Length: 547
Image (cartoon, rainbow, N blue to C red; front, top):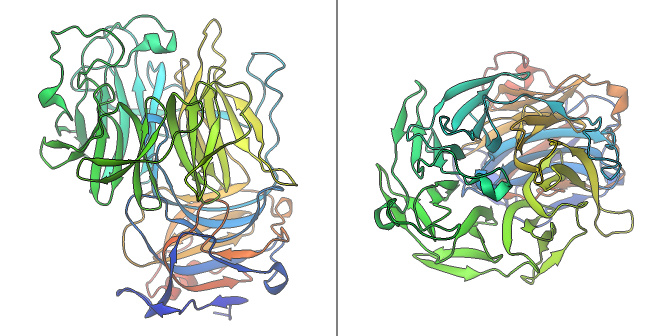
């Protein structure tokens, strides 16, 4: 193997056992920045980045590993470990997945959404409608698969769990065993796939009265052989009985299990119409941990479990049943979604349809409003850019900082143009197979978007040391994890992607988030390492080049 063109040993301190003897600890922040003049130009040629990573696994975002990306021109490359928590009720749509991407501003802008309300040509691809879905309530990636949870509106139908099969094909993994109308949340926990069921109220989306009134509220573990194991009803023991009528939308009944989120090795859930959060204690047992608020979703940021509250505040879990005030984004009566971007926590709100960024002082800064949306429902980072989906126009916007600072949102497409409907939503998002997937209501369809070229590791990166290699090889990007081929991009024309952005090379930082974990032996090679060379670099025998 030839010598790398850049080698950063990062041997500032003794490392945890099981990997390199010495490494550098990163606790968020901007990481290390190497001036562009002091780092090699990569242009349109092949290159490889390989390194050792020991990620923090508290359930939050790990962050950017190595990047040279200009967010204004959308030019450069980045290798990141990404989690998406707080994507509406889906919560952890991605947990410690990997993204290796390049871009040169190649994604064309979509047509102006104010021209008319008819679906216009965009770079989005229609990935079909799972079954009789009206509402794609949850999208989740793990185990190399993309899963969807859906709401079916008719009285004789129930919510279903689906696995994506490519193209517009969806494989039915079964309907809610309790007969309820929606699979509202999906999460990977303790090696298993968990789902929460619910009784969705369609009148909240101007779709008429409830037709299937069967209560959900149960969390299920779905095994590899298709069996659904009952894991209990969070808050069910002291909920309002089904035969007691309660006026208003917040029923006090444990009829919906949503926002499943892993944090520090525990699984958390909210019952949505009940007040408070619940933590799983095995079997069918859940323990109440407060707060005395109706919760919409959870988010994880910088080692903190956060609750997004109906009413607008953001709360931080302080242990026991104690929650601390993290402020109230101005004008929000429902803080609906969250994402980590630019090293900051961002949240989406109703009814002003604005995104707010949390500062070091604990205050919230309101960003430029994305178009004419009233509610920001889904947020995710794809290839170093933040995308948000909204209501009532069913559109997606991309965050683009201006040349002289400031914030702007660029229209990126209309995904639901169902005629005769007042409220159209882009509700769920997840990154899978190098694309951003988004689910809609009321069309019940899933769409996907490519931005630049992106290879993804579509699983949960486990604890401990891992050798990672990101390879640009002619017209493909490849990802290797511990010497094994783990992801590959779609084909692209190499000459279209000059990644020299004229910005610093950053280690442990980037446009997504400051790294939380350990790094060692970061190397940049001016060529594409072979699969055998990657395997040798981590001391294993590789299976050959990626598929």
